[in-house]
Image (cartoon, rainbow, N blue to C red; front, side, top):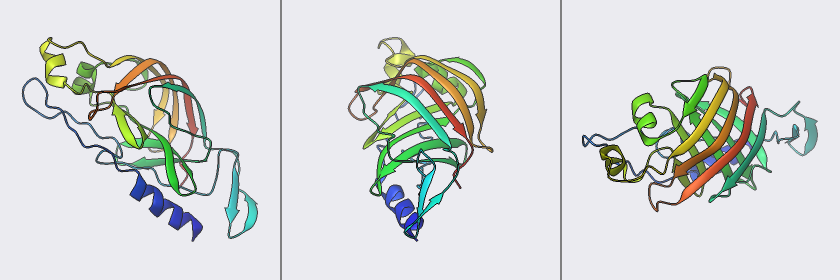
Length: 205
């Protein structure tokens, strides 16, 4: 029952901006691999240390399903709460909740993984690969002024590299390095930078 209530709370809390900037040809590039219009992470009682509370009794849920060794600048997701790994359609979300509220989420839909991906707005449009960071709002790998970027009149705020050694949606397995990855909020234009490693070892449910 507690798991169901927490899941409902997270799904309600994880809505994000659905701004979809138009491409140079007036088309609308795909912007959502998660709470912006597609995926969201649920929640479970199993925390990063594997501990679980099942109806008031301490139950060992086994090893943690995610290792979030990431640093953020310009955004502040917090993965110190209950961390879950969820697959939704063509994405994997690694999310943390505390007291039933979503405190941070990284969502990946990597259409051209594995390999080293040089990120840009053009890469997003060409590949369909999506990277989202969510905490209250969303930062993603497409410029707010995508038409200007694609038309060559605006400097692209999206950059950095993502090195994907493992990306398996069906199994919920991720092993990726973020190096100077910069994402932009499509509503206010702020930038979120990510560095470090994200690993998952299976789906929470």
